[in-house]
Amino acid sequence: MKVMDYIINEIRARKMHMTLIDPAKQSPEEAAKMAKEAYEAGTGAIMIGGSTDLSREKVDETVLKIKEAVPIPIILFPSGAHVISKYADAIYFMSLLNSNSPEYLIRQQMMGAPIIKKLGIEPISMGYIIIEPGMTVGKVGKAELIRRDKPEMAAAYALAAQYFGMQLVYLEAGSGAPEPVPPKMVKVVKDWIDIPLIVGGGIRKAEDARNIVKAGADIIVTGTLVEEVEDIKAAVSEIVKAIKV
Image (cartoon, rainbow, N blue to C red; front, side, top):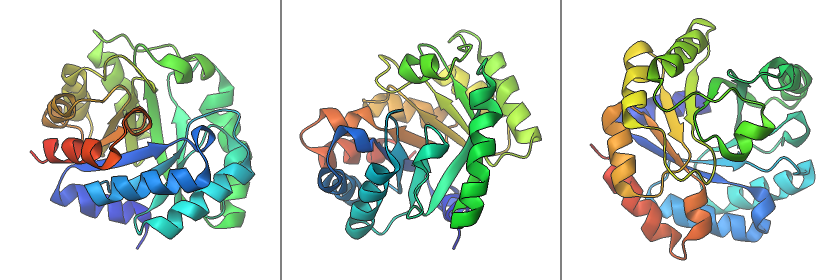
């Protein structure tokens, strides 16, 4: 089964949780342990990515160790074409839609496309939209941040992604953001589009996750959470239970 088919099947049955792991922040062995605890708590897929200074070797090692630990899909969430791992199950082939730089709109994608084709990795096209405060990804990606009080602008970008034929839309507040994407914005975006909606950045509390899925998100992503807590299984389990609405 293709990873995108798996995602569709999962969100038809229930809201989905994915765990984002940054290979630069721990050893591959530690990353595998984190992934296993998240899987045991109910996470449905592992996303690999984050830091811009990653090497492909580190990504490869991390993906291989995680594959040994969990049976769920491992999806690359790449900062650029230089970190595409042949061992991943799929890759988000994403364009940062509100970037002011061609580098993140199409240039990295142009460089990565032949690599993805050669390696035979499943590409999952995605419109990536950065919401205030944006954090590091907003700065690096030269994003013209969507204001939190401008949900219609986020919705217009999301609808453009759908009309481009993209399979997913991702609203991103930024890793480590003090607050997640506002539920009001999530609702407006979801009302405008027919494709699955992912929301990530700043989600640390079960209540926030619950409000975001009630507003319409199909998939919740947490990353900083698993870096900050001692009991990953308990923390992820709380989020997973909260999104069963």
